[in-house]
Image: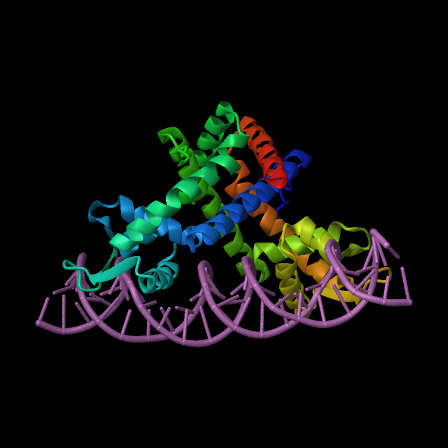
Length: 153
Length: 153
DNA sequence: GCGCTTTGGTTGAACGTTCAACTATCTGCG
DNA sequence: CGCAGATAGTTGAACGTTCAACCAAAGCGC
């Protein structure tokens, strides 16, 4: 028997479309700014951030993929480019001969340090400046709930 | 003189990262589902939706780009593919000889109708089911505020 | 009506992502 | 030990997006 589709009511429809439009515009804007000012897309910036926060500024490829919310394949390609740019280096993992360790070079760190203020300013201007403190709090709870929900599914 | 960067405080940091993770996972999931079940990415689905809602199921390329939140170039490429799939047709605009009108074919409409229930179910499962009614309301207000803010900047 | 700018749209190259296939190593189990 | 999976990571092709360059038609000022 056919299962009835649970269509969106007008309010949900409106919510969904507003969410789509807002998150698309936000990401497009930040991506463009980062590309212009730092010469890399947001996904690459995030890889550098995660590496910079790791002990010894290095992470196993899998852990880095996990941290940056990326697929293994995507990360492989991305690190190949970051390596070509001189921002990341790859080394063999000493404890697992299948493994690779990605590590942030000094040059990569410097590039990140140079890009960070502009990017943070963008996040603030385009996101936080538009919202009240209460809304920021709501957005945090909603996002955490959602991230949890999606991870478990 | 150097302007001080307005860094994110720990709460903002947490909000931003949760938002990033949640929206990335949500979009990745919906995109993958749509690709699997309907053979098209979410951006293409949205183009078909906008066309299906337009009078006569047709829109000028520019208006369609605006409606679908896409660049002109992206839309050109996308419509070329959608046309090759037989879901959209392009015609010359009668009132402006520079212009093109994209129109949804019957086949495109049928494909959309077939894909819609599954996609809507996905949006419900992955987004709305995780949130309380109050949170849905908050998300709508936040998104509308944000979309407004971004459009004006 | 004649140039100038603007608008509508396309194109190709470079880039980033996805997907499936593949290699190599590791782990568990009989 | 020996072998069947599982895990780590890479690769290439196909695809979608971006960016800048481009053409054609429209609007505008004179």
